[in-house]
Structures are given as structure tokens and as C-alpha cells.
Image 1: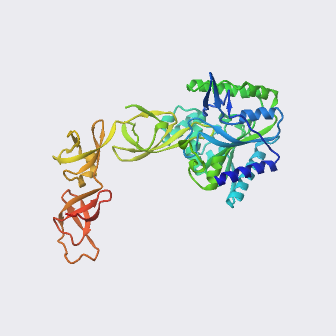
Image 2: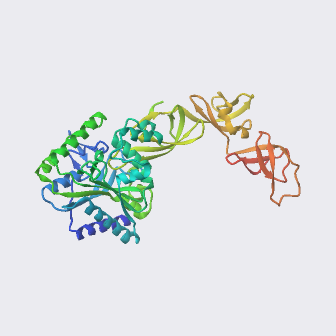
Image 3: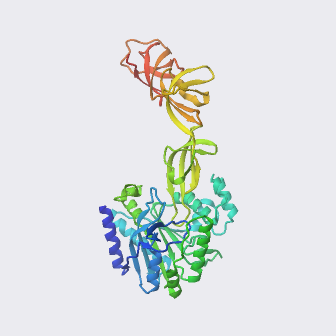
Length: 308
Length: 189
């Protein structure tokens, strides 16, 4: 608890220093994320349905579109059915946006922030590395994840003994291979993986790289092999974003998952114009786990879900 | 037997996997931030005793196994089967050699064992942790030699061979830890 208080103070001081404004966004809203792999917790309000927010992203983007400039949020987020040694349904998220920055400038700031947390709270230095999603796959599995045919992905999974995964989507096959074959072998320290596949772009821009592959400008940060943060060079094209949301909704329907009404306010804001910006969301509880050198999230929570 | 979803998985739960009953040892929830959640599950195949790992998509469900652990009294064996009795109902169960396995080395009539029933018939037998068994065969005891340490093999009435101190003799009753097969001491009369 003391470490948590110190970390919060450090994070806030870091952003005051960087002239980033703290914002407070609603936890409860009438709409929520469409991502097929993230489930919101429903809240019943009289006759209408509300959702506990899985991230402050949509509200923050509405602020950015309204001209807020650089902003950060340090507070709670909620995700249904996520419980384990690294997950609690209610968790603390740090999310921030830098206007005019690309993802590499933001990655440098993430690295500076984590280094400072280690130095101040742990009196130690953390090693820093960067790599790309395709390099990870080339090293571990010897193929290019952006161009590999889906058949080869599935047969690789079969060879590894995942025989029930033969009908999975490209994104799911890549995720499973990354989690099972690559994540456990990531170097220690802080490792940022850039250039995620286009099929996992979520809310990031995509671009065609020098090898003529469509790649997303999304990155993930791993700390001691544990996923810590996810960031984007943000997609600004309102119509393209709407297409991705519609595709999410189609997949949700196909998978018999709950129906979500699209966030019309976000769409309006993006049409009005989201500034060029990069944003990242970081799991504060997980950072605390590493700083305190514990292996279960319950050990850094005063009241884990089972005791709530 | 009902089905169990991955979020009901916990250690000790008995489920069917590839046609064999298994016991869940460990269940780890894994979720990439924007990806499909899955569960990395460690199970023990109750037929073979082998431990295996399997990755389930979260939300997937599998069939529960009709497996029950029950304390029963060992009665006798007739060469083909070993017979056990439920203490409350006096119902008898016959277990095959495969089910009894290594436990047969420690089974003494009247002792209470844990019998794992699968679809009503014995799947495996766990002997009591400590058993008292008589030495059937060993080199003659060296009476004076109680201080030296040193040991010799002794064959017990059940057929098991245990290392015992030199001073013990045929007919002595000893206490053995069945998990390790080690001599624990002389049985108190």
C-alpha cells in the first residue's frame, strides 16, 4: 500500500513535469468498447443499461478532439471475467495522450517513466530494449507474421499440440503463438514490441512498410516478460474507425456476444477532427507487482476481488 | 455429469479429456491485452497418472468426469481381482490389477485405502500413508548391532522389499511410509 501511494505520487509528478493535464473521465457510461475480446461489466440503472468503462480511451479522445492538448488519466477500469494471477476485474490504469507525437516519441517517454519508477522506488536500473513483432516471430518460429499464410499458422499450432485451434482466426492464432512461444522467452527488463500486424490494429493507424507489408502502428510494452502497456499512433480517420467498429460488432454477433451500441459521440468527435497524437495505456497494478517483485496481482491490491 | 466452463476450473475438479478422466491440478488465466483469452491448464490423467498441459479458449466447456474418491476397506485378492468394501453400505467393489497398480505392495487385509471410482468401478487405489507389515524374509538379525546404522533388504509379506536396519528379523512388524517405500520404525505392539 505504501509502494502504491509512492508510485501514484511519482506518476503524477512525472506528468506535472511534462505539462500533461490530469483528467477524470466517467467510470459509468451508456456505451462501451466494441472489441470482441473485451467484455464490459453491465450496470443496471432503473430501466436502462450502463457499462463500467474498460478504459478511458473514448472519453479522452473526445477531449482531445475538443482541443484538450496533452492529457492523462490515472484511475480505475473494469473488465468482466478477467481474473487470474495477472488480472483483477477492477484494476488501475494509467492512460495518456501526447498531441503531435508519433509512437516512437511516446515509447521513449514510457521508457523514461519506468526507468524513473525503478530508480526512485526500487533504487535499481532497468534494461531497455526494442524489437518488432516480425523479428520476434522470425527468431522463435522462423516465419513472417505479416505475410504467413493462415494454413501455415494453423499447422504450426497443430505441431505444437494445440489441436482444437485449427479453425481460429488469424489474429487468434498469432496471439496464441505470441503468448505461448514468444512472451515466455522475451529478454528480461523492459521490452517494447512495435509494428503489430494489421489484423490486430484496434485503434492504431496502419501503414505499408518498406517490405510492402501492411503493418499497424501499435506497440506493446513488456516488463520482465509480462504485458504492461499497449499504445497506438492513433487512427484519426473517423470512417475507417467506424468500419473497424462495425466489423467488431459483426464478429460479436457471430460469436453470440452481447450487443453494444456504437459510441456516436466518439464518432462525431472524430469527424470533427482528432489531432495527430499517440496514446498508451499502462497497467499500474502490474508495474507495482514488478516493483515489489511479487507474482500475483492480489499481493498489490488491498482488497482483491475474492475479498470484496 | 454436467459440463464445466473454464471459469469453473479449479484444482481437484475431475473432467473428461480425450476420453480419459483427469483431475485438474492448476488453472492459469492468460489474456493478451487485445486478444483472445485462454486458460493454461495442468491436469493429471487419472488412468495413467501422467501430468499433461492443455490450453483452452476461455469460456470453452468440457464434460465433467464421474469420479469419486472413497475410503474403503481392503478385503482380499483372488489372483484376478482385489476386493474392497464400502464401510457404510458393505457394498463390495472388485479392482483390476491395472487399477491397484503399485498399491498392491502395501495392501494388508482390513486396512482402509482410498479407492477412486470412475463410473462406479475402481480406477485407482491409494494405500494408507503408513502401513504396518510383517517381515517375511531377511538375513538373520545381528542382535548387538543397534547403533551402527547400516541396512539390509527385507521382503515383506505383501511382496514389497524395504531397506531395514540390521537388527531386525523375520517375523518383526515394521512401519513403512508408502509414498517413499521407506522404513519408519518398528511397530509398537
